Image 1 (cartoon, rainbow, N blue to C red):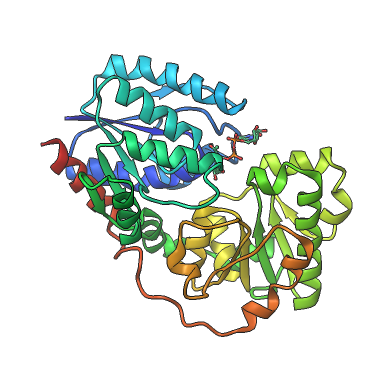
Image 2: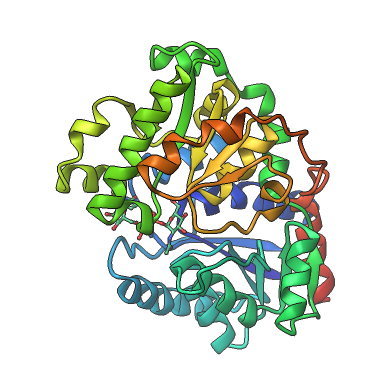
Length: 360
Ligand code: UD1
């Protein structure tokens, strides 16, 4: 049996590290890795391959950045060639990026079954590029692996009931596996910070960083929140955010924050363990903060990880200076952490088992 696994953006490298390894360890199938090239900077791509020990991809489609259509089209045509050459029994795709949707579409048109990892996540508004990618990928997939039972419920509401598995979250597997390698004190020291003395912020979503006023509001909100809570603010910068801070002339607000390059997995998790709390628009980091016992302020209109917001552990917040500066009040309320909603740390093995079962 042969499975092609398609990755292209940061969060997908992390998930592939474990799923690819679980497939090889079980001798489940020949695992052929394809990198779309959606993320290409060393700190957005290579660092994950190195520190997580992901083998070199057999194919690199080199699509780079571009409009949604250009990027999706380039993955679609590039991947089709690789699929025709490999003739796999299934294509594995992860998450909700343009790479995910293009991969699912290319395979479905060739009648190659699609396995979607992180299926069934739903959030408003429906116009978000990631929501479009998620919904369409799920409807093209034959095997749908959800992080929690909420994913299965969401899929059932759309009439998708066969090939659905609740496998758990691969990010939790990775957290459990890697936690001995996290070095919170050393990571803080690199930025001149003391453990517990800072909040860790990440912003990269188009709706938060692509408009001048919104981006400025987020940065000013961070400055005020830091001042009011007596914490430094560490902000590692996605290339998109860095570029927009320069283009929009928001450097004055940003200069009052501790800025950093995008960290690799080990450094980001070390910083998460060391921080007082997280403020983010990353889908992955809002769960990883929970694994590390930290609460997260989520700068998104909605979240797919409702298990963490419904109980008040994570808090949704608008991308406005006043809202961000005022979030300290909600954080001051003590909330018991929710239980183990995303599995037992064996999601990668469960995903491999589900794919095998469906293909046999
Ligand atoms: C993409 C995903 C998003 C995911 C994120 C993880 C889509 C629609 N969005 O967003 O869901 O949370 O990845 O990081 O697929 N850039 C570089 N170097 C790189 C990569 C990007 O400079 O290696 C810059 C380019 O200017 C590019 C911009 O960042 O135009 C945005 O990159 P893109 O891949 O389109 O989306 P992300 O914001 O990374």
